[in-house]
Image 1 (tube, helix red, strand yellow):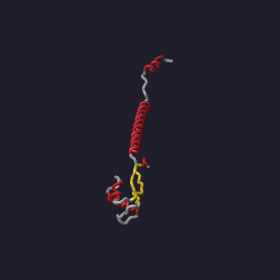
Image 2 (tube, helix red, strand yellow):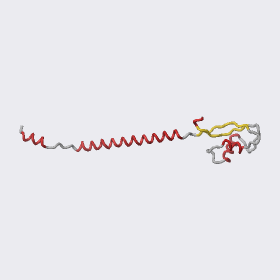
Image 3 (cartoon, helix red, strand yellow):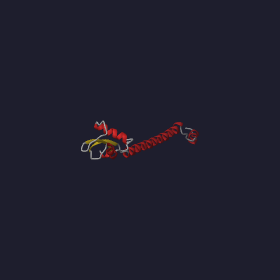
Image 4 (cartoon, one colour):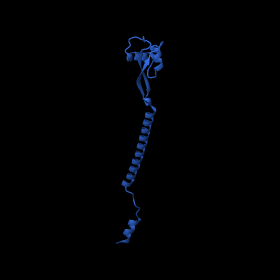
Length: 123
């Protein structure tokens, strides 16, 4: 073979094909996209877990209360009322509804059902 032909082949610098350059770029973008997705999923999962553990769900329960001398629906309601009720009137109405009362008159020695809220962890 002709030595000049071989020399010409050896002397030309090797060119990277456009496929290799764009392929490397695509791999870099894919890697970056995967890292971003992992970060987003980690943040979302951590936020949901923290919210779920910090929010103690309140559960409605009832208790039976014996009416003592001097008790009124209002005094009993003020002992058991929690932030779930907007005001004492609303809570007294719920106590009356729970007991089938048509008036606020109650008698010592009787029992009434009083709804109240507690943390679900205590349930």
